[in-house]
Image (cartoon, rainbow, N blue to C red):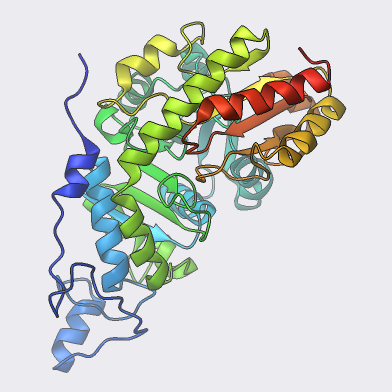
Length: 401
């Protein structure tokens, strides 16, 4: 049965009463905060005082407002915001794991995350197994006595596989391990914590902020986990220090109030483009098409009417053809040849040579990432049919269709 949970309503119901009556919260740009007596400062450093701020690397009011809104959206007890999506991912993983531990993760994951898991964690004697996250028998078979974490993306980057969060949660809970989900591709569409994820991470840079004018991340989870993460003595986020600038926090918080509108339009436009690509005879990956392997799964997990995300991909015969198509599409004002996603204009890139370039070529081929794959983040175009016609003209010019 579909959940009636509506993340947009949770954000709408969050009211902020500014000190001076402003409808937008005041930006707090202080690095440190005053205490009226030394005893309160001592108690705050010990973590015993609610509502007090001591130093902006720990908490500041602007970041707390954004974190609280993200927790409402995700239906988690708490959240923490960071200076980048990678900071959120790395801090959360390092908070969960120590030397000698083991992680299971999807082989089809964002290149930066892959590089952290594959290249960086071995320095700390943390072992990682890369699996097909849709093959639950493989997930189970890779669990060891020292496995502490299953890490996946709701919709994987760039191959757009959909993770069965409920099934993975059941596996994790049975074995007494944690499930962490990166929901960057599908904010509001999927609520991983409500499906059983213990921790949800985001690159706020993408859909949630939506304007490609800042870098930021978020970690959502239980109050105990967030408190441990921000503990002044041994909290990973507190000690590694990836603090988000409060001015950026305030900007992102404002943009969250239009996220539901933007996600619906991104998804609507992507669906139209995906259907058009299919009619043109292209090999298209989009989880909103019934022939996608996890179409029914995603449909069963979705909230309200936010669609199937704004991300899709097509497979072309060669990287040379992919490059030429992207070059022409930019000239024809389809959008930008650029990495990242969730922008109001369409972005496209060749994943194997860009956002997944950290993944060795032999692993790219093993996971099904062909060299001519072009990933699209479909924008908020008012007339998507006009955009489709422009893309079609580019495809015809190159004799792809």
